[in-house]
Length: 499
Ligand SMILES: NC(=O)c1ccc[n+]([C@@H]2O[C@H](COP(=O)([O-])OP(=O)(O)OC[C@H]3O[C@@H](n4cnc5c(N)ncnc54)[C@H](OP(=O)(O)O)[C@@H]3O)[C@@H](O)[C@H]2O)c1
Image (cartoon, rainbow, N blue to C red; front, side, top):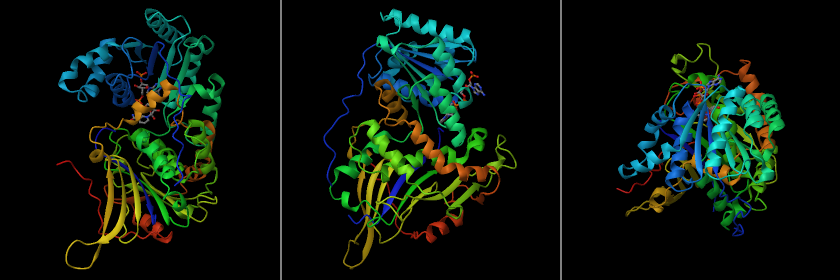
C-alpha cells in the first residue's frame, strides 16, 4: 500500500550483553550473461504497477538489467497497447527518478512490450512465446538457450492454469543452457490443505529449483544483517538463549486501513497476510541455530527446524482485534469476523528456547524502563539500537533509559538500501532461493496456524473491537502481562535525522 507507514521491529528484552561466520560468499550463485526475458503476468494490476515494474526500473537504473540483453513483457487480459501499459506505469516510476534521469526512464519503457490474452488460452501463450522468441532471436540467442523469468502478479486461483500454459508453450530448455523460473506471490494457499494442493499442482509442472515463492518481502539487507549480528559477534553467542533473554517481541504496525483492498484483506485477515509469513520469517532468523554456511539451502534447513519446534498455539494465548470502522469499507462484509489485529504467543520447544515466549504482534513498540532491550528495526528507518540504563546527565545522581544507536540512514549516508522487491527479482535472476519459501518450510508454517485459522473461519473466535491508531485491544497487553512482559512508559526512541 502506497501511503502511511509500516513498522516492523524485533525487540529482545534483557539481552545482558561470538564465534563468527566464516568469511564466505556463496560461490554457487549463478552469474549469467545470456539474453533475459522478464514476463510480468497480471501486468494490468495493482502489484505490477506499484511494486514489480518499479523494482525492474530500479534494477535497470543501477545497471543490473542491461539494455542489450533484457526485454520485459507484460501479459494480462485487459486490451492495452504497448504505450498504454507504459503510460499506466510511468507515474509509479518517474517520481523515483531525478530530472536528469528522464532519458533513462524512456529507455526503460521502450524495453516493455504488452501481450493481451487470457490465463488459460493457448492462443495467448503461443503469441507470448512468439514475442519472446523474436526478442531472443534479435539478441542472437539460439532457441531454448535463453533465460525466461515469469512473474505471476496474479490471484493464486489462476496459478495452476498459467503454469500449465507456460509449461506447454513458453519453456526454455535447461539442457540447452537456458532456464525458466516462476515467481509466485503470497498468499500461497489459505491453509495447510490449500497450500499443499497448490504446491502439488505446481510441483507436477516445475521442480523446486524453478519455483520462487515470495512469502515475505522483508528488507533483505537487515535480514542478512540479523544473521551476521547474531553469529559474527562473540558477545551475543553465549547470551542468545532462554537464560539471558526474557522474551522476544516481533512487532508489525501500520497506520492506515484497507485502502481499497478490503475485499482481498477480508478474505485473508492479519494472520494470513502478515503473521504466518512475514513475522514467522523474522522469528526463524531470530531463533534458528547457526547454519552450516550462508548458502540458501543451509539457511532454509535451519528455518524449517525452528518451525518444526513450535508448539501448538493455545487459544488462551491469542488475542484478536478488528478496528472500528473496518466494516464501513464497501468491499468488506457487514458480518465480517476477520481480524485486523492479533497478538499470538508462540513457544519453541528446543534446547535453546524451551519455556520462552515469542510474541507476534501487530501493534506498537514496547518499552520498559530499566530492562535492556535490543531492538532490530527492519523497516522503515532501518536501525539497531540497544536500550540501556545510564546516568542522567547533570549534577543529580539519577538514572535514565537511553540507547546505543545504529541508525542506518545516518551511519551509511551514501548507501542506498535496496527495496525488497529489487532484491527478490535480482535473486531470482541469479538463482538464489534463500529469501523464497521452500515447500517444506511453507508446510510447517501453515501447520502452525491452520488450527487457529479454522476456528476463526468457523466463527469460534471473535475479534475484539479497538480504536484505529491505538495499540489494539487492552486484552492484548493483559495477555503479554500474564506471559511476564509488563510494558512501562517513558522511553521513546527518536529516529535521528541529518538536520
Ligand atoms: N497489491 C499488492 O500490494 C500486493 C502485495 C503483496 C502480494 N500481492 C499478491 O500479488 C498478486 C497480485 O496482486 P494485485 O493486487 O496486483 O491483484 P489484482 O490487481 O487484483 O490482479 C492483478 C491482475 O490479475 C487479473 N485478475 C484479477 N482478478 C482475476 C481473476 N479473478 N481471474 C483472473 N485474472 C484476474 C487482472 O488483470 P486482467 O483482468 O487484465 O487479466 C488484474 O489486473 C496477488 O496474489 C496478491 O495477493 C499483492
